[in-house]
Amino acid sequence: MGSVQIGNDVEIGSCTTIDRGALENTVISDGVKIDNQVQIGHNTFIGEHSVICGCTGISGSVTIGKYCVMGGASGTVGHISIVDHVKVSAMSLVSESITEAGSYSSGTWHMKTAQWKRSNIRFQQLDSITKRLKELEKIADEK
Image (tube, rainbow, N blue to C red; front, side, top):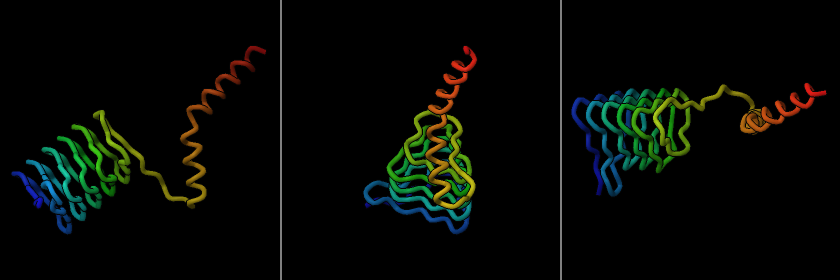
């Protein structure tokens, strides 16, 4: 049965929950800073000197690398990995593994669900729409 291992110089804010591992340990490495009201799921590994800001939810069996920052109210799905030196903006959802260091964002403002669904589909189509528009502009300029 797993347990929770907490490294040296770790800070854990109030009302934070760290689930023990089911089969393997949940590990909070040296120098990690965890703000208030954070949920850390079972079998999670958080690398050295990472920062987890308030109201963040980390699902079970997640691996977070060294020197990462999870912005406030961000979250992850379970069973993913995040490499070293990643910054996740506030209110972002990490829905798949992050394999390259850098800054990632996904949060959006609130709107009615039906409008959000339409906007999200259009957002995903922007690259192809832009390409088509440039082709049409080129044709129009040639005339």
